[in-house]
Image (cartoon, rainbow, N blue to C red; front, side, top):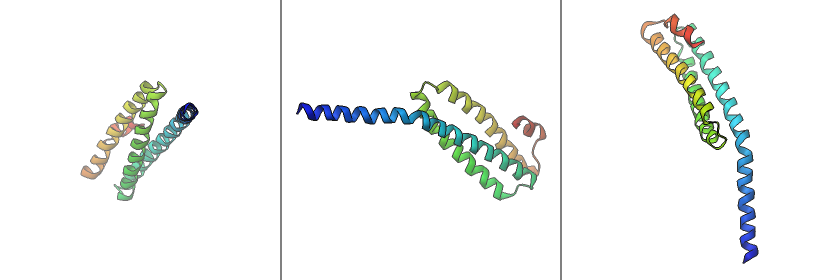
Length: 124
């Protein structure tokens, strides 16, 4: 019985150790996916605005925003384990600003045919 309990403890320790070791790598992967998704969203926004609100690029923007938000949610969970919550919160605040500007400019493109140049400049 004592051997079984020790085996369970060792097994639990090994599983926990692997989870802790995987966390930094997964966090880096999430940050890389966020970077790629942000780049894709902004690139597709410029294509969207340059090609008179082409719906293909609008769909691509939405896909990139979804990927960014999924990676951000995962990174937020992992950052709490690694004491990086403040850094992820700063990234999220910056992204919310850019995302809001992108949404405003997309709406301007759809409603009036052109974005507000000042707001586009603020995105960069």
